Length: 289
Length: 320
Image (cartoon, rainbow over all chains, first blue to last red; front, side, top):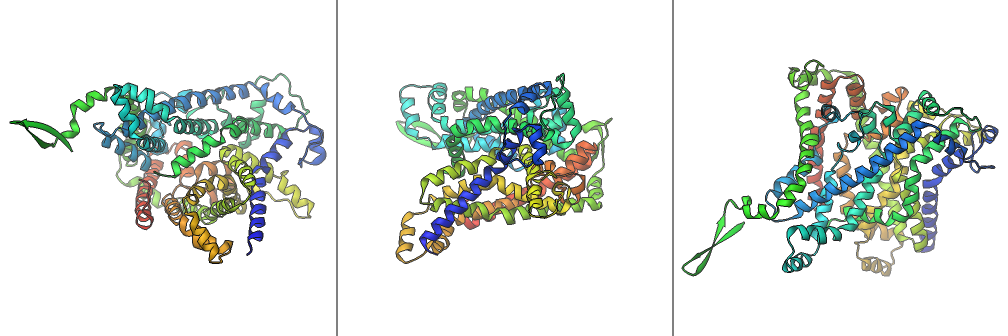
């Protein structure tokens, strides 16, 4: 194969796959922007809307279940990411201190949790016995620290140049100052990556809410979306929560697609700005020392 | 080893300190670290290790609501003999392994091929734009993914419309057991192919560029260069990821399956985790499904440890 043929083939294949990566999303978005008349006229086959309306998105806000779900998701994402990040950094820093007594035991304890887990039922029973069911803490605490992230961040701390540590000690810095003023600021890129991944994980989470939460008012957004696809009854419960009248100018399918877009919108919005943090973080985890 | 200086008559003698790990002085130095990690240790104790304890006890008991975890009757291996006698367990096990192997068979190569094509692209503009687009599906939740699959494959979805345009018949993709696995695995590949290139791109960046130049001088075309330079350079990464995937064969991506399956497709889609969820939490058969979980955890542990040591033997890299 000649170089030119290869280059052209590569460019075409890469472009096609890239386009396909976003095509379904495009389809969902255009389905969500049409009036019911256009939907019916085209039989739901909307590649490019003739007339755009944001009513589907506006109608969502009339449902109190929807607004509550948004609130729950935003809250768990913010709190969860912050707490997880704080505890992950502490733990990783601790096990990166070579002279820390008990370090090997800690490391082993963390490693074991990567290989072995409690299982679905036992974990559920523990969460139940801790009185966390039907509270937002059931969405934050059970997954508080991810052992894998701890190990990656520990590796990062260990790879920091020791000259910085040594010169700080010569300057009379105690362990606390060393950690707070020097090591942690130097770990900022790795911390940003872990914080972002954790935030995305929280935003997308639905299964923990499925098993731990029965109260509809505490459902996160993703669970709401899942229920909506699971059966239409759930969908009408959501629609009727709070809305005085349902304006029938938008088809059910468009509403569903609008909900789906809500589920991905924040991530899509921040993604272009944060892409380099995500890939850098992945790089850090992939390339080991 | 820690040494204690011991001055005797002006000479410094170093003696090994067998209890060095207790190092009280060191513990004092790090007191605030111990303080800070206490909540983490509590968390690990309650939410990671305690459930492990529950799992190994509950699997051997006959759980009743009255007895709870600790006062239910011990029944030894009865839970296990009961499960292994059930036909549906073997169907679940077959589905789990089949789906994992299918995922591996169809999903292993595409990211590698895509990574190589990306890497070899002359146009860095095209590469960067593509990468931006390719990584996006990785950030969708599986719920969103299912929503998109629904938009495409439902009875009024895009695919059925296109089918009818070309004169075909509309298919009930989402409720058909024959379409379940293709849709499942196809959508998973679609979601992760872009993100999956990252680790291979990282690997390729470590290949010495002069090897490519030497190959070109020897007259090797692009395909030959891939075969003789790129793939050997990626060998360690590939073997590592492959063996790791085999180690995880009993985890068949249940989060996605839970969303995609329905009673019409249980026969081909029900895997260990979904079975445990439905029978365990749904039908409240806590101890029996815990036994299934324990089975999965133990076999899984053996598989991961074996695959890790195999990977280490072949490539020198493992998980740790």
